[in-house]
Amino acid sequence: MTGPISVPDLEAAFQAGAPDRAWKWLADARRQVARDRGALELLFPAAARACGRARLPSLLPSPDRWRTDDVARVLVLASMAWRDPDRLHGLYDHGDADEKRAILLALDFIEVGDGGLAIVEDALRTNDTRLITAALGRYGARHLSASAYRQAILKAVFCGIPLAAVSGLDDRADAELARMLGDFVRERSVAGRTVPDDVWSILARFP
Image 1 (cartoon, helix red, strand yellow):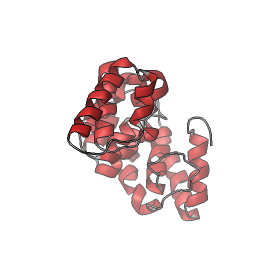
Image 2 (cartoon, helix red, strand yellow; image 1 turned 90 degrees about the vertical axis):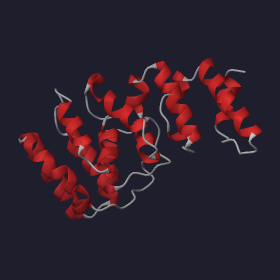
Image 3 (cartoon, rainbow, N blue to C red; image 1 turned 180 degrees about the vertical axis):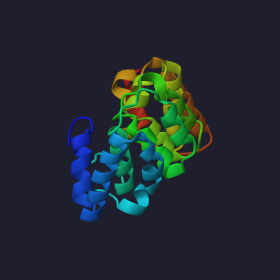
Image 4 (cartoon, rainbow, N blue to C red; image 1 turned 45 degrees about the vertical axis):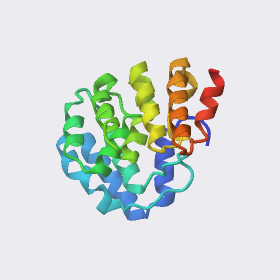
């Protein structure tokens, strides 16, 4: 697949990798939250039990593979209008790591303006590589400041997250990011530690 993942891509991946009963649950859940926003607090955590945690086919081009519960939660969130992000923040604050990750993934598919930025920033303060990777999707690449984006890339490299999993590098990499990565490379080399191969392409762009 080329281009950004869309809601129809998620639906197709889910249908290909989830049992029929999971698809039925998801369709019902999407109808319920579209009708009654209050149903979200019950349905969102229930997605893993109802849909399982099966890894999905390679239809989704991410080094960090999506699971059936991820897609179910994202599609449920994408079924709602998010005029006020406070409810999303509450869901994130009270969620477990899987639920937090799904909310971060969903930011690429819902309209919240800058309202999801605090969620991204919180994820980037953790050492959970799955949350950091999800925070560096299309939403994070669009909304993080230049300084915050550079720090996020440096943290991703430090944590061993492949830069192929990060959005926005083609447009947002700059000489300052290359300088920071150059310092990182020198520190690692002096300490006799390996350097991730994917930093060299950025350094080559800004010698």
